[in-house]
Length: 356
Image 1: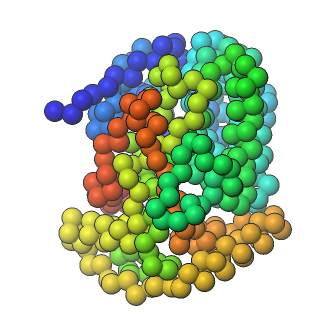
Image 2 (image 1 turned 90 degrees about the vertical axis):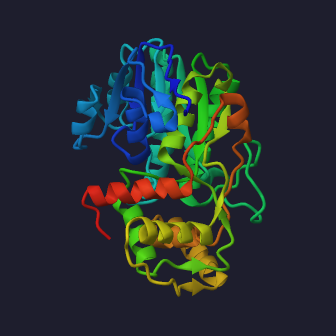
């Protein structure tokens, strides 16, 4: 029988940003209703207040019994209103921007927006802040057998990586200066799972049609994180005493090669859902990835963000981390691996009108 871990947050209130997002939504569910398959069982001993942008669909959050605050991380007035009366609370900051309209939004939201929130939270007496970061501040692994650890040096990739690096440095400076609020940074790589956005459904569609481009040998490795696994790690970072002032990588048990990822998705579509999956003839030379990297850098230097070029530039790179520290310190134990996670993702798509 799978062990179930109650969420025992020693706080009257949890402040949550990004609750209407993909991963943030799973954290919201873990806090309010529990995610037993990920080993998380809510205990209902705290309130949850979510900060959402104006115009965001909050119907699901309302159903979960959350308090709702609307606002923008770039506006101090709305940030202060969000943290008002939050003495002793725990903040879980999941909001950020990955694919912006322009490059300037990276630092405005991911860096300065986080600084605004942490500054206001500290003044309001929030006890601990768990802040979501990414693999991007440390860039790419030098070879496919290398794994990033929490001690790996910064080598940010593009505007997103730089914005997260600057964010992390600002937070670590707060810790070094003796912040009255405990700060924990968690890094997550490419994640997958139900409630996915259209860009992930497009990935499934391209695999089904044999059109997903594999650049190079496909033996480069990618750490991935099933959303419920990541939610488990985030909640552990919020409750574990030894997490204070530290940083942790969260991901699935082991990295996967790009060949393996494409193969597993194809198997799930064909064997588990009876779909016809075409063979993938799209094998492109490594030079294509290199050219995309150069073009992405040139565009971002000019302030332009092009999502497809940016994603293509990463497809032949190894981005893989070691989760040993999270295991040892937090007791992190990812329970759902690639095939089961992809099964759940595809099942959710089909039940929610995302056909491919």
